[in-house]
Length: 155
Image 1: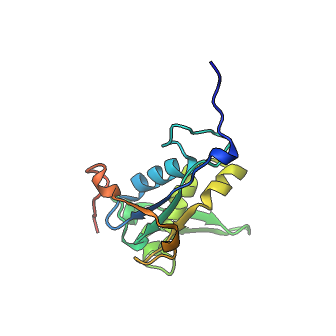
Image 2: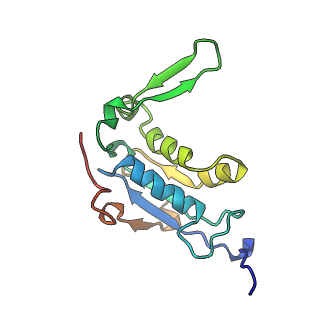
């Protein structure tokens, strides 16, 4: 019995389109992270970028479960003394770049390192319903119908 190892020439990347309208952020981010790593494929190899490309549309219409929409806090530091900044998902979604909520959630679910940074570049998030990847012919995935808990909107 021999151990299977995927080669660069054997990798077949697909394009997946997900509509995030009314979808719970945490469940969506966990699914996207799994697809970006390629763990949904039987030929998964940890040291190769064998995951698919993911396009997410309607990122401003995502939902949070529980009270996370107004209670969850994202922290960042400017690098200067006293430079701790914080904001809530409510502020981000109503701001200029609402797609950052999904990007932050997915990035924090991927591991750290050069391979994770390479895999993260295969994620394309758009706040509206339009995207520029029609030439790649992405396959639309109805994520809300995979599980009844995936689709919920608290406001």
